[in-house]
Length: 523
Image (tube, one colour):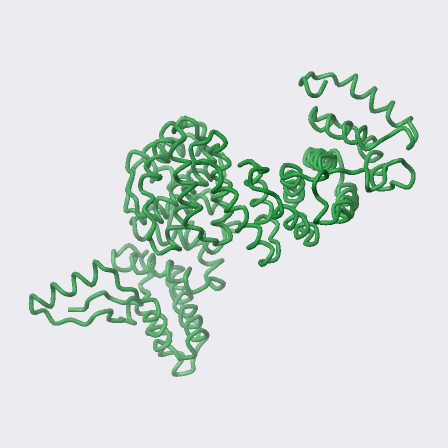
């Protein structure tokens, strides 16, 4: 009934009650696995029956189910079935842990060199996926299955099994040496598949690429192979999640590889695929990952942004409360690419102020503040929201986040949009804080507006973070931090050479501590 997807609740209820009347000797490995998987597939709830099945599995002395009767397929099907019941709320944490404790013993009881005829690549992938779905890290099991998998020939795997295996190891966070060995082997296995083979599905490609990028394993040959496979799949076959994962993984890879990879063709292909997605199909997190990826690659794709804006407008209806990090990535992407799409900005302007500042992490707040300053989104409601967030988070922000907030404070000051009474700019605050610290009269009450208070708090935090990292004092510490951030691009170097040819005197990378920035060229 479950295989034929026939809904028959009375039958399942009757069979469940019948199962509870039978003694342990009536059950075998096959029958227990069949009951668990069938009820999971049918999403039928009978907690008493599932608890009974778990007891039969874990107390084999009462039954005819010794550990040696459990083969790879039975283990994988049982774990997969119980995990599904757990996800549906049919079994509690104690029951699922009892089952996994016993199955870990079963798996470890098979010597690594005797896996043939007991485990295959598909079994191992499903078992690991089950552990990952409940976030259970069992180092001995993961190490044991890693050794088994590495003894198998690549032709025993399929792409989906590779995707499940690498994602499981990455998700649970296994010990690094175990992770490196299995990921290196899975890379070799993946490259054995023909890029033009139908085995490569968008979701499998995105899962493999995303897993490697999440643990910062830059395998250029593997990523080139996956990119070729992705380009051979028609854009219409992609879904939003696979597009977002591929864009996110490859943009991260390119940034870490120093921009040495040419993935422009792949990004055009992903853009075509995204443009084919219905407005209602894209979720906010998908849009955020796509925007973030294109921003990392500094790729301005205006038609794509217009399409994504329609999806955001469709999502951001009254009452919708978005994820702060997703919204910050979208707005940050617009600011990095200097794209002022009116529809997207209008969506951001009405969406951001409804987010609860207490639920917004420092990085999301900093990204949004930087973007407001760069895009000059001086909407009163937006600025009021930013102020509430900064009052709560600025004291706990790291150096990088504070630098982003500094951009907003400097923009507000230079553009003359600070409220009346808030006339303390970030430049003045940095100098005043330095002088106050030197005089030793910190803590004197000062009557001033809220933005001035935030500005002074930002200046104090910048100096404090700088001093702790540089072992210097005051503005000297900030100067040291700014000089440590200096990078010179090929474009900048070319501009400097031409200025010298024109006879211009200048200072390169001049640090102006009053502003808190290093200037590429100070004429």
